[in-house]
Length: 254
Image (cartoon, rainbow, N blue to C red; front, side):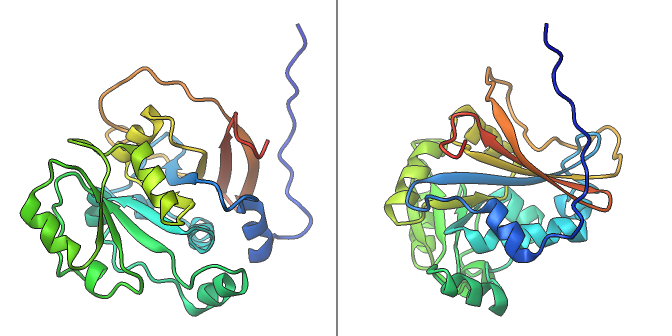
């Protein structure tokens, strides 16, 4: 049997610029639906530190996190993660806005919040201070009164009967011209995306800490039979941080 090739990871002679990073993560065909998921994990697989993913973050992770938002048409986040991580209005800085405009994109990406229960406050700054009208992705079974309240401050998409259907969500967002989808969690929603084979790409930062037992993984929920093959598109390093990009094996980029 042929031995698998193993190579050492070597640093380049010069650090990569923001433009280099943007090029590395750019999807060539922006006209087709593409769903990227972004997470951070400790070395031993924890998705949070002290209950928050942000507490695992490093300066390099934040830099790439911000650059990935430049590239997308819509940022998708589960409502539980919005509450836990203290999300505010989705607003990029002036440099990012200028970059997007110079590349033919809208000034700001759309913020899409996924919630089956609609446990969201219509008076929250997420809605009232948003630079672009947000989207709420929900289900037929969601409370009608709350759906009507949120419809005053956001576009409400119905994607499923009792649980959000990721493929229906993808289709409806793409129909709005929001083809480049960037999902920032949380773990339960990631499980739904995996189950329905809705993930094209995973960007995973490995933070060089050990958190020990008890913390959740980047995916959680009821077990199901799923095995999805991905390959490593690139690996970036920044001191002790690894920044990994995985693409689905049947990806047209390969």
